[in-house]
Amino acid sequence: MSNDTKIKPRYDLLLRLCDKLEKLPRSRFDYSTWVDTEKWKGKVDLSCGTTACALGWATTIPSIRKQGLKLSRIGSVLCKGGYAELAASIAFGISNEDASFLFYPGSVSSIYNWQSPGQHATAKQVAAHIRRFVNAHKVLHNDLHEEFRVRGVY
Image (cartoon, rainbow, N blue to C red; front, top):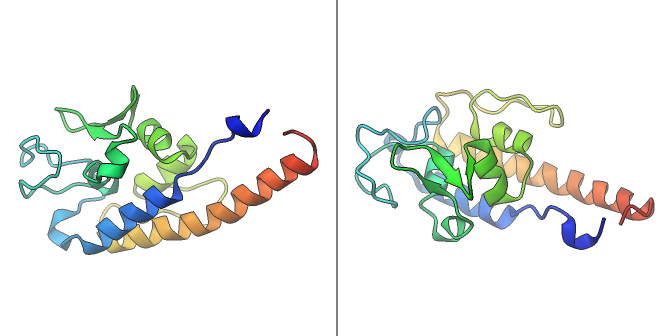
């Protein structure tokens, strides 16, 4: 395996999402649904007053949209043919399991020793969860790649 084929996590995009979530009014966040399709009028910036989850709000950030992440007309999150956690995985350069851990309420990871916030979490609680993940993932990711380098895998 060459260095070019390594997955490159986009911590910068995850942290940009955290910044957005930390500024959201409580009434505009719902961790349990991508977007409230009854209120959403199709605007990419969600300026219609709808609620959305972290991944739904991620679609409003231009640098993340550039990765291909978007809401479909029916309110599903898509990215380059992927749907839901696969879409998040593609956009943020993380595994499907990590994407589920970040963006699904109450998810448990086989790697990290905490559970994602529950469905009634606030945007700030989810942002704190994502920041904690980024810090832990950086350590694990760097350790893993150093181990592969030492073993001559790449």
